[in-house]
Structure formats: C-alpha cells, structure tokens
Image 1: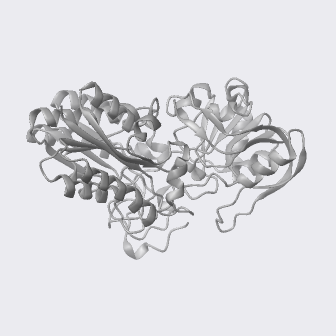
Image 2 (image 1 turned 180 degrees about the vertical axis):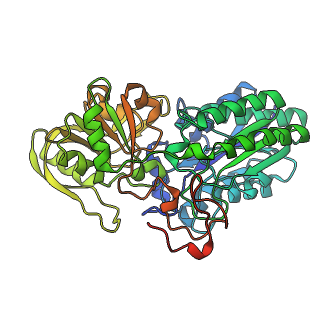
Image 3 (image 1 turned 135 degrees about the vertical axis):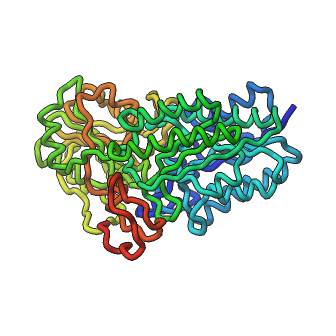
Length: 505
C-alpha cells in the first residue's frame, strides 16, 4: 500500500489590506476549519467543500494510506506574519520528516500567499517539502483560481491543479482532480512535461466570475482542449492585489511534450483575444442604490456587490459607504450583510431585542478618511453566529462568527457579525430571520462568491465601487513592485517602476 502525506495552508494575501494574518487568524479559520495538526485534520474537514477533503476522499478510494501533516486557513488579509507561517509550515515539515518513507505528497494551497519574509509563500512551502522528500517523490498541489502562479511553484511541484469555477463551487472536486494526477504519477513513475504561460494584463476580481463572460467561455474552451490533447490544464486569472513581480494571470499544462505545448498554444491566444471582455461596469454607491430602488422587488431583489470591502479579498467587512447610501436614499426593504463590528454586536446583545439606541457602526480598520456611521437603530434579532451553510460554495462549512445582531433604520436593515467572512451563503441571513429572496434590495460584502447562492434569486446584480481596500480596478492601487510592462487592467496602462507613486489608493 502506497503512503501519501497530506497537508496544506490557505491564505490569499492583499498586500494593500489594513491588517495582517497572525497565528490567531488561522486558529479562528475565517469561516474555514481552524488550524489542524495530525489526525484531527480528517474530522475537521469532513463534509466540507474544501480541496483537502476532496483529495482525502479520492486517495482513500484508491486505497492509499494517508499521513496527515498540518492544514490551516485564514481569511484574506495583508501579509501572513512570519510567526504564523513558521509555526504552521514548521509543524508540517517536522511531521513530514517524522513520517518515514512516503510515496507521494498532496498539498492544499492557495497560490497567492505573501508573508513578511516571502513574496511567494506557496513556492517556499513547496521548496521545503521538496527538500525533505527529494526529487523522485511526486508532489502535487491544488490551487485557488486566484493563484498568482510562480516559477518556483511550477519548478517544485510535479503538477498543479486549479479551481475552474468562481464562485468556487468546485473546491473539493479540484482536490480530487489533483489526487487523480498524483495517482497517475504513482502508477506510471513518469513525470509529465510542464507547460507554463504568463499573461501581460491584470483583471479585477468581479470580471473573473465564471458565471459571466469571458471566463465562462474560456473555461469551457480549456476543457475542450484538455479532451482533445490529453493534457491536464489549468487557468488562473490571478489575484490582482499582491504587489510583487509574479502577480498576474497564467495557464498551465501537463502531459507529453507535444500535448502540453499544443494545449497552451491553443488556449493562450483565446485569453489574449478576450482581454477587452474583462472590462466591466462599476457603479458608485449613489447610482447603484438609485437603480436598485427602481428595479428591486420581493422575490427578485436587486443584489449589490460591495466588492471593495470584500473579506474574501482582504477587506475587513467594516466599511459603511454603501450602508450610509441605502439609509440616505430611504431604500425600502433593503438589507446589508455582513458588517463586521464585534463591539456593536455585543452592544446590541446587551441592549436586547426591541431596544432602540444610538450606534456608531463599522469603520474599525482605520482606513484614512473613514469614520463610523452614527445613527439610531432598533435591535430586531440576535444570534450566536453558529450555523451550517447550505449554498453551493460553502455547503457543509460550520460557521462560528461570534455574536450577531440584526439592526433596523427605517426600511434598511444591517446584519452585524463579530468575525469576518464574506457574505456568500443565504444561511448567514437566515440565522437572523432574514429570507433574502423576500427583500427588495440585498447588499453583500462580496465580490463574486455570492453569485453561487444569490444570483438564482436576483432580479439583477450590480457591482458597486464603495470605499474599501479590495479595489475593483487594479489600476487604482499604488503598485511599486510589479514586473515592468504588465497592463494594470484590460487594455489598461502598462506599469513602469517610475510611476509607482502616481496611482490613487
């Protein structure tokens, strides 16, 4: 029986975000299971749509014996602290050394982790793993669709497999696909030819959704090319919020030399031709709310994506620009969630249901120029923040968001939570008695993941450029370390180091 070591570490790093991911962030998990070492890994991920769970199921089905190492995840934020990285990766490597002879390694990684000391966190993890197991043991990893794939990742892994959906409803299937690649390497003993292509433009997160064009057609094309050539392919639109030279979009292919290169030769021009289609409309809060009031109706609400404060892209879910506009325009039957404000949630619990009092909501990150939203709100519902998600992406995730509260001001309600997670599952609202489909307007602190569970009920989806650190247009960041010449958006200006300080934050 072959022995497979299993582990991983997931973090998506927005180097422009206001707060870092320390070890405590991985203990909390940010909606994902908390950090795990050894055997507890298996139970922690059971039933969840998580890559490592898909890999575990597939490897067990193939009768491999699994050795659990370490696994961890935290909400996207600024850089991972060296302390958190070394404690988690150090334990993973120590357990790998202690495992004795193994036949292969599967890792559940993100692909866009930056630490205090490493621009390429995953490349460093793979380097350390390869240092332990040597060149002959196959090492395979799954990556997030937002991976900024680097030369080091490609060099140290025998194969990488990347999500094909955004929202990421195929996380567990991607883990299973990576496990299948590993099983193939074990059965043949061969190493595939690696093909790697990097593209020369960045795209904003909202335009990367596979529910819309051009990504919808590009991923369909990728699967057709894969069938035709026999190559195993992946496409990463990238995470355009990490300021380092290898940030950006890329494509991968594994197979015979002719198959891998032929696959990339067919796919890469299609991505380049699609560049103009990645541009999309972004509304300011006032325009978005006006349109939502016009078109939103119970049963088919207007859904507003508060994309720039997305906790899934490094925001803290605490900015109030869109909430303030909903209140200012007296939006009817409107609800916004989740606003992450532990102090206000606790104050609501202390006051109790039915209490009406003054609150100063949100804006806890210290973003320059932002102040809490002051106003009088009524406490409508309270919750403990413990529930299980049911939507396509987060299905099986057991949330522990701390004290939650539902507040009302006129026709506008806001859901408060104490721990940050993006609003991508309707159970987050139902926990406080709100049925999203019954509203006229639903505002969500999310960029794209909400589409999996909310788009089916939406009369329209509007992407809002409201204040926050997860800027929807990459050209708005103050870049300083990108590779020269990469375009800062579809058909956008090219980055030049001398222009590093001329952008708007």
